[in-house]
Length: 505
Image (cartoon, rainbow, N blue to C red):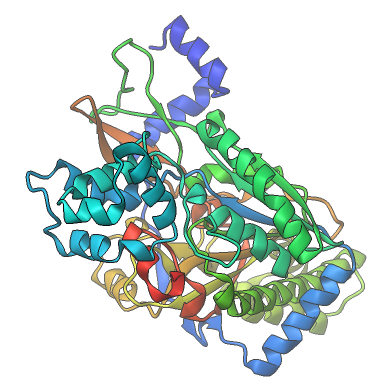
């Protein structure tokens, strides 16, 4: 039973009582596993364009931009960097004083190679009167670690990834935020302007704004374009309630309901509010220095060119269906396009009468479209591309996480384990219909594909609910196309020592 205080709390967040009850019901019921047909592979859901095709797609993309279409680069950037430094936090708390694990030794042995080394060295000198070299010589390794992570130093333990110094450049070290601004200039600028949208946490909003104010002019001058840089935060209305193990609402010590951010799937609401024809989606930490950007730029243009080419064809077919000026042969052509190019299959399609077939084809063509770059699987944790059954009985391409797969099903687990490709979150989205109207993206979310995980607060066990992931269930009912892109375009930074990889030096 909800109290008056509970109802006030819900109203403040913009969460209805109905939505709260639905979330509590999901804790009790759980989420159904997905039915799989196969892991996507080259020739079965994943295309691998050759050099001539890539060149054609790049030309298509540049021609599209030249027509004045509005293009936006969307970067989820609210994540804190604290997980990057898990091993360094553990070192600070450890009973020993000198680096002992392989991770710790590698970090301190190579500390001068980090882009933040000079800034860290300056903080060490200011706070202790000693350089990093002197502190290492004196065995004061924990002082160095604390200066990197704590507020009196660089405060990297509390900052978001987007504001850490990742790469060295001639003009000075750059943050991921800056690398994304440079990327936007290289492949996402239209009308001589680059539109970039970052989703950030409220507590760090002002720091992002300060960084943009300080650095954007430098890239305006370098690339001869204007920037339109926007920020948004995850909406409180997308928070999810915590639950006790028995499914009842988890309450804070003051009796209020505990709410938690709903995961990156909540960002479909932010994406939905962006005014754009085409939106690039890429994670904040998947960036490289300038010497490696040409290949990233090339492939971004390839997948964008493929998207606008497929979209144009879909629009032409929709206009044909709308006009009524078609014959059965034309319908067969449209079926081939939906099944072969968009990889959306309905095995009993021949049983449909023409009138029902037209309705089916219109529904499948007139929805958001995305082209996703996928890389060869090299054992990175995360989701992969699959051919999956939908609730309407069709089979289409989806990006799945392991939690969506029934682990008791040996066939499915074998598919997942032997999958040839991995999802690096390299997505280009078309979000307007054939009449130029924006789709309402929340309408295309599969609400049965959330996640439930076990957490704790103040020593008490709680269940947490995550909304369908942004590139999983939140885009479930989109037309999806997978393209193999080189592994060199995927360079995430999950731990601080990843910055010592050759690609980030």
